[in-house]
Image (cartoon, rainbow, N blue to C red; front, side, top):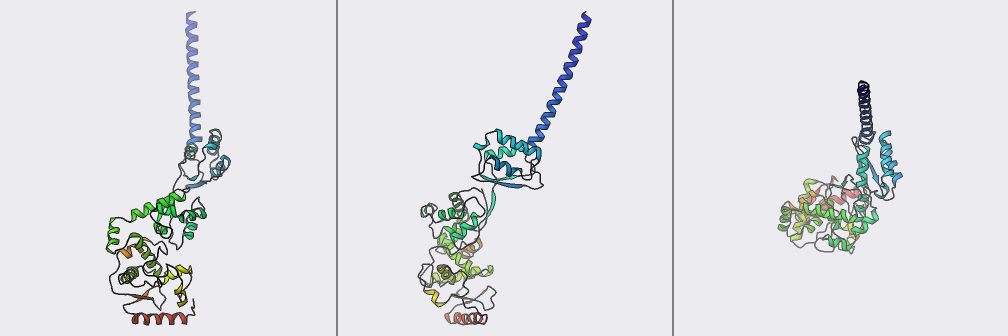
Amino acid sequence: MHSDFFFNFARMKKKTKKIIISVAALMAVVAAAGHYVFRSHINGGEKTRYIIIDDDDDVDSVVSKVGKDARGLQMSAFEWLARRDAYAEHIRTGRYAIDKSIGALSLYQKLKRGEQDPLNLTVPSVRTLDKMAARLSNKLQMDSTTLYRALTDSALCAKMGCDTANIIGLFIPETYQVYWDVTPEDLIARMKKEHDRFWNDQRKQKAKKLNLTPAEVTVLASIVAEETNHTPEKATVAGLYLNRIRKNMLLQADPTVKFALRDFAAKRVLNRMLTVDSPYNTYKYEGLPPGPIRNPAAEDIDAVLEDQRHDFLYMCAKETFDGTHNFARTMAEHEQNARKYTQALNERGIKK
C-alpha cells in the first residue's frame, strides 16, 4: 500500500511539473507576444514620420493620425491603450516623431506626457512685421494675426527691451529649434535670448568704438543689406554711411525712402518720392531711422562692426546692373556716376 502511495505521488509530482512547465512556457509566449505587440516598432515605414496634434484633436483623431502607415497589431495595441487609459484627459498639442524603432507603449507614453520633438525654424530676412508673422506662423501652430499682435504690442516689446519699430531686429536670420506649439510670447523671448547671445562682449565693444548701440548697428546693417547683396561690398557701404554719420550728413539712403512709402518694387527713387514725411526718409531727417528696414543677417551686422575705413561719401548703382556700386568722394564724382546709371535706366526703359 505504501508503494502505491509513493507511486501515485511521484506521478502527481511529475504531472504537476509538466503543468508548471507548460504554464511557464505559456506565460513566456504571452510575454513574448505582449512584448512584440506593445514594444516592437509601430512605424510601418522606413523613415521617421511626424504627427501634429492640434487643440481640437480627440482620441479618435489622434488614433487616426498615428494609424497612417502603422503596423496592424502594434496599432491595435496603441488604440487599446488610448481608449482604456483616460487619454482623452491628457491629449497634449505638439509635433511628435514616430521613428522606426519606437513601440506602441513608448509612443503612447510619449504622447500622453507631451514629450514632443522640436522642429527647425528658419527665421527669414524680411522688411515688415506682417511678413515676419506670416512666414513664421506658416511653420507653427499659431496664426499670423496672433503673432503680429504680439509683435506690435508695445508693452510686450518694452518687456523685451525694445519697441515696435525695432523689435524685428531681435530676429536674426538663422535656423533655431523650437516647439511647434510655442506661444508668440515664448517665441519672441527665445529670439531675444538668441539676440543677446549673438551680441557678445566682443561685438558690444566694436559697437561702442563706433559710438553706436547694438540697436543702432542693427538699423545701419539693415540699410547695408538693402543697398547691396554683394558681400565684398558690404563693409565698404557700411564705412560710407558711418562717414556720413560722423560728418552729420543726411544718410540719403534710397532703401529708407522705399520703406517709408512701402514701395519695395520701385527700381528708381524719383525726386517726388524724396518728399515723403516719414522718420524713415533719410533724405529729410538726419541720423538713423527709428528701426531696421529689414532684419539684417549676421554678416550684415558684422560688416558694420568691421567696416572698411575709407573717405567715400557717395555711392550709386553701377550702370552694368550687376548689383555692385560706384563709390565717390565728391559730389562731382557722384553726379558723374549718377548720370551713367540714369542713362542706363533710360536705355532699358525703366521709369519707376
